[in-house]
Each structure stands twice: as structure tokens, then as C-alpha cells.
Image (cartoon, rainbow, N blue to C red; front, side, top):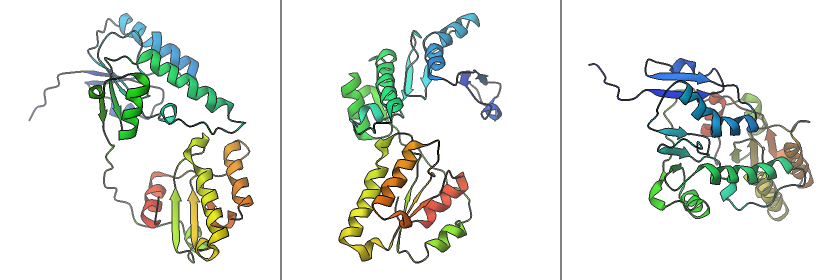
Length: 259
């Protein structure tokens, strides 16, 4: 059976990993924009200039990066995956001047590029409500779309070093993510186990916790979390695993008791 395609897609990316998806109807365009300033210029003026030069008149613009495409006078869909500006978080550390600046600028960028005509996609109900209130977007223009996770055929195994270290522990906790900004509550988790150790030491001794990052000279926030763990006297309960492959992540999900 032949398939009739109604539309052609032009996809702008900054890496080579999407080349395999190019077809007659999907054109992959690689652009060299690694810095935020370059990205701002491209989204504001570059896309429209590129389309005009190619004499292309699009009917829909889709952004997967939380901000809209300015001056592109067509219907747009914006997938808001950055929840920080809507969270009300104010507990930044004194060394987090970059996240503080980012939090301010990304929200201003959203205000600048997202209009009431924009269709918004979010993952959660609370974010829908916050986006509607802070960006003054009608509820009916915001869609909640949860990501689907396909069944992965990966053997249920786990790193033996981790399993051997924690074989005597009864409650294995898995905390995936990277410590880029402190709003992810890693400190709260560490201090909660510390509080438990002071009040219920027998129970606390049964808890293991794995993070998917390692303290390093380049990551001051990760070193801060390790310092807190030592102060709480629970560093022995924690594995600083480092970044994981897809297979490692699935295996950790399968083998640990709580996320």
C-alpha cells in the first residue's frame, strides 16, 4: 500500500545524531548554534531569514525547546520541558549565578516568543496551571501529553560492584538525573536520610541510594552534595555512579525499589 504524504518537514538540529531520520519528506538541517546567544539570534531572526532565502512558506512551526519562534507569523506548537521558571524555586546556592541568570532569561524569552495563539504542550497538570497563569495562556491552548516509554528488551542485570556493595541493604533507592541546578531536591533527599539515621538508625542502615552523577572538580554542585552526605554521616549509604547508558538506566529501574 502506498502512503500519501500531505506535508514535508524541515528539522533544524545542531548534531549529527538525527541524520538517519532523513527521508524524501523529512529534511534535516544542521546549524552550528551551541551557545545561548547564538540560539537566541537563530530563533528570533535566523529561521525566518533562512526560510525567506529558500522561498519556503511554512504552515506550522514546532519548538521542542520551551520557547517559541519569534516573527514567524504562523501557528506554532511549543513543547515546554523546562519547568524551573514556573516552580517558584528560590533556594539557589551562592555559587549558582549561572542558573539564577538562566532562570530569569529563559522566562523572559518565553514571554517574548509565546503568544496567546501558541499551542503549548506540557507533561503535568501543575505545569499546565502554572504556564497558564504566568504566561497568560488560555487553558484550552495547553495540552497535557505524557511521554510513552516503549518496552525495551534488555536483560535484567545490574552492575555487580554495586550489587555486591549493597547486597545487605533492604531498601534500594534510585535517583536519576544530573546536578545542574539545585532545585532537583537532591539535598532534601540526603538530609532526609540523615534525619532518619539520627532518629531511626536501624532503619537508616538498611537504605542505599544511588545517584547518576559523580562529584568532580568541574561540578561544584555535585561536590556540595557529597559534602552534605559526609556531614550527615550517610556517605557510606550512597553510590555516586556517574552517567549511565540506556541499558544501565533500565537495569537500575528494574533492580531498585523506589525512584
